[in-house]
Length: 373
Image 1 (cartoon, rainbow, N blue to C red):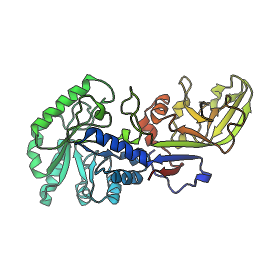
Image 2: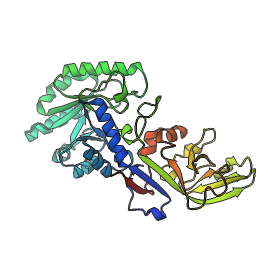
Image 3: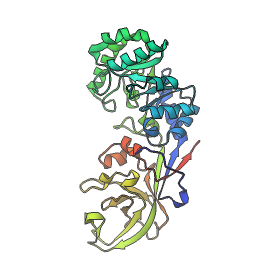
């Protein structure tokens, strides 16, 4: 969902509390900055800073030294500009038709990914009589956005009308060892050779950790800043940023064979103790995480992992706490859904999705607690 809460939610009455560690966010940015020096380290803050809140994230990253930010939509760019008047902002989704004037007024740089976009920006700059900056994205193999490599010569004459501030491309699978990475690096080198005097950027979070070290002039991490593992087959070098706790509404005993939740998909294999939590798919918790046939998501209670059971509801979920000592969990206690024990990558994997989706679906109904400011 990635939306800000509609109003302040009191922790004392909230069904769940989302704690966001801004010191960890800043530390993750500094780790990446130090790894790529002297290359500039930017920050991708699209989707409400991957769900943690754009304004607090920008404030913390700017204080740490970040000066360049990437967003997806103009609305996000305007929020960044309201916080920082002198930072550089790039618009990943490019130039939508007729948006040139709005971008120019707020000094926002579009990332031009097609010849029609290039032509529209060049025409606007010519009409205004000024060379405004923009980035140019070339497709090297992801086939999503980007000027095709065979259109390099169509691009060249348009560059006289504006300031080409950055050449870009985007990795398709930098999180794994793949020959495709080397092919994309080689393809982008050809682009750079065609436009040798323009700064260039290729690396996302995982790209920073490739052995080829294709750092160039600027790297633009996103997921890793928020605690996601940029090296999925190795230990996570990033600090955890988000902790999610849900309120325990009730603890109850059920007999062996009792069916639990909608559809009765899970039945108690023995006399069981169950905790009902004030969190569900309406709060961004993946419903597929409790699907039959999956290894199943868990919560941490009494310093032990406890499995979710039954079908996840919109507002509620059920966790099996049978093997915890009597009295270890009570009504009013909190269960940890995300944190140091269970990270966003694990929750995503066990839900049949990815940590990116977990982050950007963080719900509106949580009380948000910012620490480490």
